[in-house]
Length: 85
Image (tube, rainbow, N blue to C red; front, side):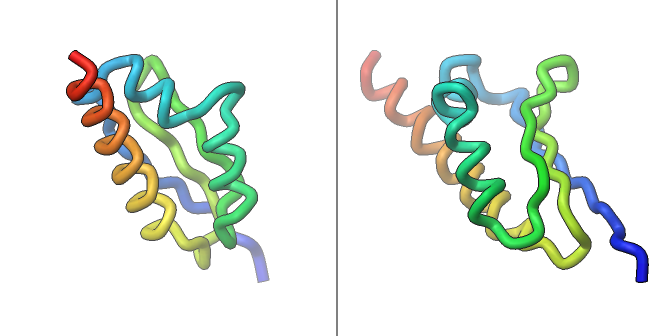
């Protein structure tokens, strides 16, 4: 049986660069952590040209969990920045 790769995307056009950078983490540490610790996820990447976070994995991957986590962290980081101002 062939392994089917699925790709999901999160539009991050409404977030500023600092929020996105905080979410990615230094040297991509958060994306790496979520990739390594989410079953079936093979790749998480911020596509700057499209202003999207791309997530690739097997069709059995826990996309909903990682998407929810990323969105929660984006919103949390945005609030941190707003509270600083």
